[in-house]
Length: 72
Image (tube, rainbow, N blue to C red; front, side):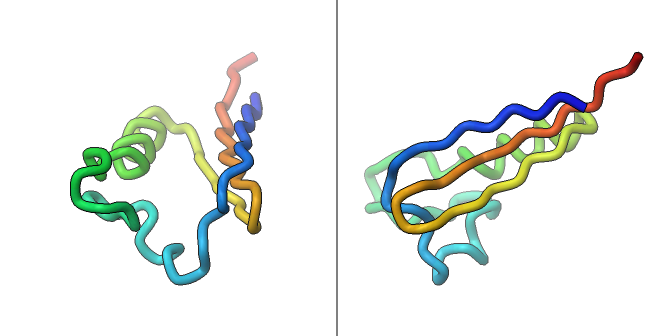
């Protein structure tokens, strides 16, 4: 298994937002900021390829971890 983690130092994902983060067109941003397809599209692509994506977030940091199966 290959694990790839990417972290940022953003505001974090607030608890009231968690239920919708993987939903298409969901965003806590204003209407003119972004396509609102980012996380939904990423999740669909990785799952279609037997890859797993997880997210962990606290105030000040969000980390996405992708688990890629490796055949030996």
